[in-house]
Image (cartoon, rainbow, N blue to C red; front, side, top):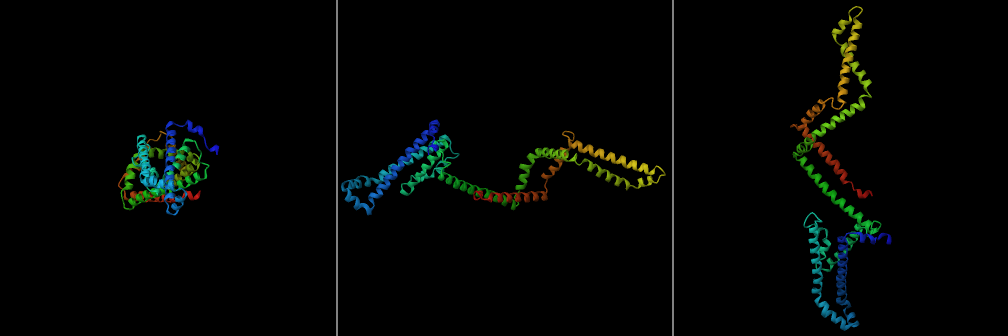
Length: 335
């Protein structure tokens, strides 16, 4: 047990943390005093045991009834007033320290203390939950180590399950709302295009241009010989289909030679032009028109195009459905 308690951490902690822990311990002692008073009063005033207490100590029992039990409401009211005043003071301190983003977050997070101020014995027991808050504070300070504690592990497990379930419900509701807007033909797709796509168009142009350059640099050199042969074959086929060349081939002696030389020259010219263009595209800064071409293509996306808007809508709905399927998975069941 000693390896889970580190008193030196308590001494090393800030003065504020030590004061809060000390005050929490004092409040727990006051709470136990209040609960003990409620239990003792219930036992002494229970009709089934009243005759027993009367026979055991008649004068003391009668004194309790006349002095303590008769003023039970006032005594218990003093405890309630103390608890309520302490709650208000802590609330004020929390606001000054800006521990929560809103005014009413403190009573929401400390609901057990607030309900414990209700002057009913059933609610008073809720203040025992403050013991848990003290242990968690000591755990954060490093004074105690609760990670190996069975009850702490169970608490963390069910806490994570609760947080996951609540957050999943919130996310699913938001996604359903977005899908409903798309189903109602709400111009959300147009807003996405205007507010998301177009402001990032310059970055998209650079990314696409860089992608084309990388693709050409990686794959063009590997397939250059095959591409060259394919282009030469197509050029030769196109040249051979020309009637003028067929007439030239009919020249005696030199006709075939001239025809073959023309095919070779045309193939070389076409290939050198194609190879030069591709090499320029694959080289940074040598083909500035590439960005202009991509810009012109992307600019068409912002035009009024019903088919494009319908495509955007369908893709967005499909994306929402994929996200919903992922969110709907209960991760805690797989642990």
